[in-house]
Image (cartoon, rainbow, N blue to C red):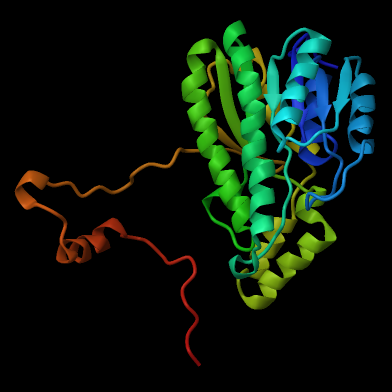
Length: 311
C-alpha cells in the first residue's frame, strides 16, 4: 500500500463495480478513506441492492483504510447530499470526489423513448451535478478539493447512444465550468474519458449491439475489434487517482483519455478556422457569402455519415 493520498477522504460514485470500483481501490491503496456509493442496480438503471457497495467496502478495508457504503441514487438530490454528508460525518471532511456512476439505455434516435432520455440524463449529467454541487461549498470553504468526473468518447458523437453521448457532453462542459469557478479556491476539477472492459461496455447485450452495427454497415469489423479489445478498469485506475493527489494541484479543467493501452489529453473545443470581416461595412451575411466561404471553413472535412446511395 502507498501513502500518496494518505489521510484524505474520498467519495466515489458507481464504486460497486467497473471503473468506479477500480478507482475506489486505487485511492484506498494510496491511503485514502473512501465512501463507496453504488445503487446496486443493473446497467439500465433498474433494480437496487447493497452487495456491490458492500463488497468494495470490504476490499478497501483490507488495504488498511476506513470505508463505508452508501446505497442511494446520485440522480436524487437528497441522496447525493447524504453521500457527501456521510463522508464529513464519518471522516471529518471531504477532500476528493470522483463521479463515475452511470447507466446506459442504448437506442437509435428514432427508437429512443422519453424515459430512456430522462433517466440517462438524470443519472449521468444531473447526478454528476448533484454530487459536485453538494461538495463544492465545503471544498470552497476549506480551500482544498479534488474533483474528477467521468465522460466518454461518445461526447463528440456516437451511434445508438444519443442520450448517453449528450449527457457526457454536458459533463465535459460542467467540468470546464467547475474548474474555472473553483480553481481560485484550491479546488481542481478534471475528467477522464476512459475505455475499459466493464459490465456496461462489454455485457452480452452491448456486444450484440456492437455486432448489429457491423452487420448494418455503421461500423467496420476493424472498428468492432478496436472497441472490444480493451483492458479492465484496473489498468487505468492510477490516472484518476493521480488527479486526486497534491501532485496534481496545478492540473485543472483538463480531460484525459485513459485506458490500458493509452493515456491522452483532449484539447478543449475551439474555433479552428475563422473568416473575419468588418460587419459595419459589409452588413449581414448573405446566402452568397455563406456559400462562398463554406469550402474554406470545411477544407479537409468529410461527412461522418453520408446518405446511402439509392439503388
